[in-house]
Length: 114
Length: 117
Image (cartoon, rainbow over all chains, first blue to last red):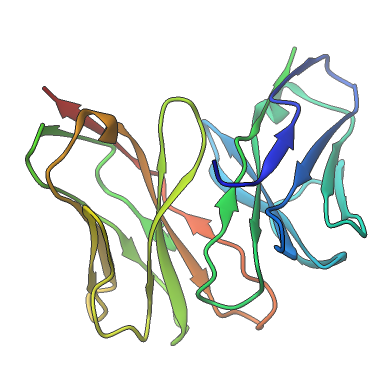
């Protein structure tokens, strides 16, 4: 158990819908990262927050947004869902921004868009 | 160019044997970190080992060691005494120093390791 929690574990929804994925980082970790894992794109970085502020954006679609709250939990919002958004979405956390700090991954949320 | 290349989509190893999973990387940064993660069929990503670009010694964590060859830009994972529970997908990842604030990981495409009894 990495200490990072993600809910829900599975999510099945229809095209055009909106969903929210939730992540609670390890206790004491200030940095949260969101990654998407799909068969065709592999593991891709989406967005990073540090202590409530957005720090970096990767290959995140405009239909997707995220935020980190004062209690450090984070939410990833996916809207106008398409079939291609079906993927495993991971949240990871690390204690700080330093080079050596490993990221601990949550169990992931498996999103299926039908 | 791919930043992280894992050329072995699948590997087989006999139980109790050692196995090396290849990883090459591409970066112009002097300061960077290299990571290996394990993803079993259950889906979670498990951190295995870390190597910093300035570390002179190869990293080791139990049965895992990282064969770091900086000039060749390779960071191969060596698993000694393979166990059935080592069967999983293994990902090599890199964190570059970038602009000093972003610390995201770039992942390779992974190697599916199967340990045979």
